[in-house]
Image 1 (cartoon, rainbow, N blue to C red):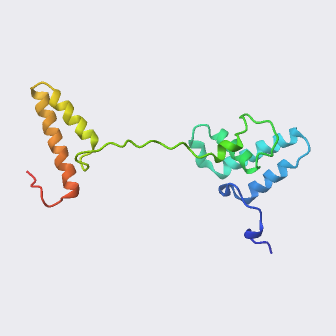
Image 2: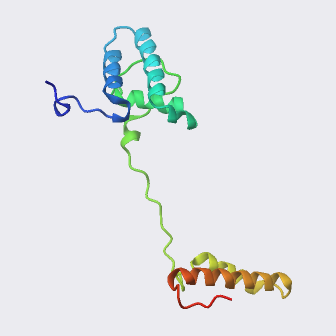
Image 3: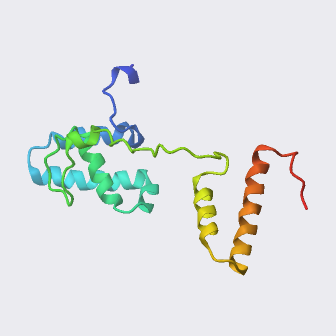
Length: 154
């Protein structure tokens, strides 16, 4: 009896062991034409196994990339897409800088502060009155999130 712990590790387990075995077989084929034909068949089988990938843009390229990744980049065949770089697959994304600014009233957020500054600059009139009412209503709504019992509804 063969246990899964004794088998080779699957790099992308979503496709199952049968696809991994097909890829291992395709890598060992003698000619490039045979490997290319096998790779196209494998990509078709991968499409059938994961139909949800069809909703993505460039799903064919993703399938070919997965094919090369599962073969440990050993599959030498003609592909409609370039083989991805092995280093780029395991590279971590760059850290996104988080803005470090102080917000005076955190429960209202920085965007509301900007809206209030814009409202102060507006000239007097119906638009400024309407915006002031909308700001007050929105602030009351946000305040209710934290203090459900202390605001009177009118």
